[in-house]
View 1: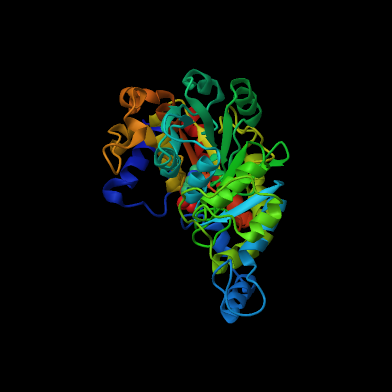
View 2: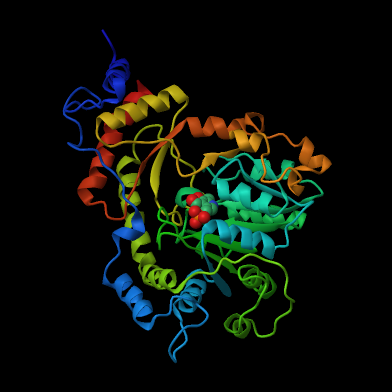
Length: 442
Ligand SMILES: Cc1ncc(COP(=O)(O)O)c(C=O)c1O
């Protein structure tokens, strides 16, 4: 006779044989919580309406797709307006629009004057862009472990600091703010700069302060998977006029255009050699419309997460992802933790049978184990990052992030959507309540 847990494990295994999903039977062998699988959508595009169209139409009819000039007597102003409203929303002195979150990271590192010989600490679990931007700056990336928030573990940062360390790149992943009090205290003790990567947490906050406004410089992505979007796009924020000037110049070939010069007052820098990451007016217009909806999108998804957390709060032994500021997180997903990978996989199989799929932490990559990172493959063999003594000797691979590998193998979550109905959040609660106790208690 199988006990309940063994039954679930056995039937869940059968159900996924050959990639087929069993229909009509839930994890306990009876009717599943839902008839069809629940699926979260892309957030920003669900809110596209006549506001985005109006912005696009204005750029189109004025024939002004370029942010700095164009035909007609009125100067283009979509990207400029977006920058102004972004700085206000993020409570920073300055904001700069760029072409992507990756471009924003490169711009922010340049703005901090990170270059060859410098080391930057980043989490082992984050997006490719973080590592790539450090290498593209000619600097050396040094990985730190994550903790159960899935964000960089402040306790592991200190042991990674060397005399060459210049900055800590923290990434607020999947809507969850990092432990910024500990990180800022540590950075201040060691005289390091903090770059906040808010790509996956646009609109989230930490202890009442918008993410991006706490460190020395912050970046955002406005690509499709993010809170709001124009398909592609990015932004850089800072309170520091010198960092802003260097960022504004870096994103535009080294030049400082009159509108940015006006915002700054008096420039402090000369031309320097730089790439070109300017945002166009179509993107600026769409992002302006989306930004004006950001707070309602965030409120909706947060409310859905609250309903789920409240609905499962009394489950005995509930182990969820660590939230350094529960009021500030976006609520992108509700992650639960298990004591082993096997138990976590059982949970995912059972949730899938209830048509409320749970998935492992997503949207980032365990970077040190990627082949091209482990082997330090760069576009040119003499790339500065890996040609110093330290660059040659640093080891990546699984050995530098055992804790990260372990944590990520033991958590699974259900993604949330700002447009989920009460019925859908109730389904999530019902599925977790049915499945979780049988897995952890059985
Ligand atoms: C943590 C993080 N940083 C940076 C980026 C880069 O943003 P983009 O795709 O806009 O270049 C992403 C994109 O997913 C990300 O998740």
